Image 1 (tube, helix red, strand yellow):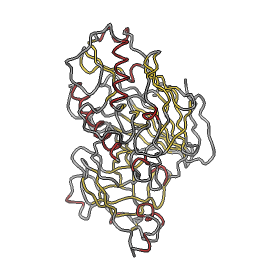
Image 2: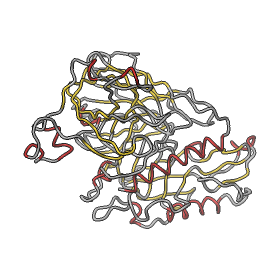
Image 3: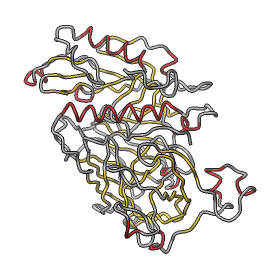
Image 4: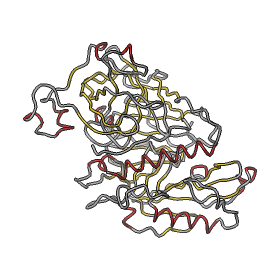
Length: 450
């Protein structure tokens, strides 16, 4: 895996508990939030989240009411938002008996891993202790799962246990070596046996979740190992920022048959096919055809909209783990200039320094009466995502509101590298979002998420 800095964006802790059981294959997991950092400064909160988002973007670039299926093959999770960290975490139980740890949900990597310990009594952070589990197995060279990480010829160059897996996950663990295990992943009323997981001897930095659950697109990913045909979520509104206790929901579906959710608009999912950039192949790309601000179509050069086929740049990804939507500077400039043009009757906050742009002086009492142009994304196949105003226009101070998209204003990111646009989770709130893995498509519909 490429060496890249990382800082997650918007964290959740999921406390495993069964709330509803439709059958022995139906699980609901209740999630509780990470403790929020003691800050009442809205500007500081947003700055933290934006800084987290730009760091995650660096990592990526460096390398209608909906009838939801609730069959017996659906695993269900309730989630809460934390306004400091900018990512989701899930509490999972591994081992026999299960040991529960928190995992950051990362849609930009595939391997799931956690810290282990040889002397757990001396640690001040949660770890997995293999000595306390009767189901721990070291991954062998001849196991096909070893080849997921080291290639098909690994069994000809190693004997015994699969080699340690080395990579960098900066800001949390820095350079890291993982001992590879097979272990039971335990949900209420359902156990997944021989789940491949990495075991780290390093502790996470203060304030970060214990491990990482990889939701990328490789064989070792969390969705692949569970045999998911779909995963989906519905994120409740987090406006204003001082409402952290509203729950959202996430679903995991393992039914091999095709199920249909009424009212969804669909567009194909794509993989980046650049063989020299395997990290980019982890992402969930869509083909963005048009961007509208109000009734005006923004003339975006084609190369920014389409997933790369012969180089590493371009296209749009959908990312649960990024707080805000990122746009390459050229795209960002075209979009924000059109907002400024159409909102010319409002006083621009030119002296307010933030990642977001443009910003305007707006009285809170006037917020619901102001005329903000719609922001619309149109995808391949004609599916349109018409964002509610709360998803892209928000107060950052008592009298300053901004368009909540960002770019690399300081020139910190590689130019012409990685996705050109990343759809963040703020822009996905009050939408039902479905990653239909069996049919390789993304579905979405406006939904009041509760």
